[in-house]
Image (cartoon, rainbow, N blue to C red; front, top):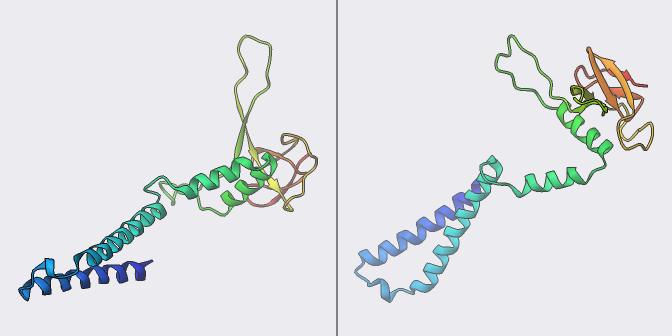
Length: 176
């Protein structure tokens, strides 16, 4: 990317210097074929703008088609595969904390869950931490939601498989 930008910027500088030399030699800019040079300078300027937009895209400063693409791809996954993909990605990340000397954190995927009751006020929500299968693609059944539960690190884990990985400590756990 840097070499493209440097080359284009060099070409713009070269063409601009050529125009200045033409003017300083006493030639009228109208005697120099301006249309071709102007078209070339316009292409170079557009290329620089495109590179700047690409840099913003990479920096996340502009709405990114890549984010939309990733979001659409994740939405299209069946839920159990979504859990497997996102949980694996979160396990690979370092959670940022304000005071690393005093804090530790893990990024996890959770499901807010409650039972529907006929009472006037619904029960409070509970968080179930979603765990991925120990072996990729190994699921206990083809149900529509996580049917297995286990515990690890003092948390309730919900899963689609019986043999799972705890998303907090990374150790194998079992669910029933």
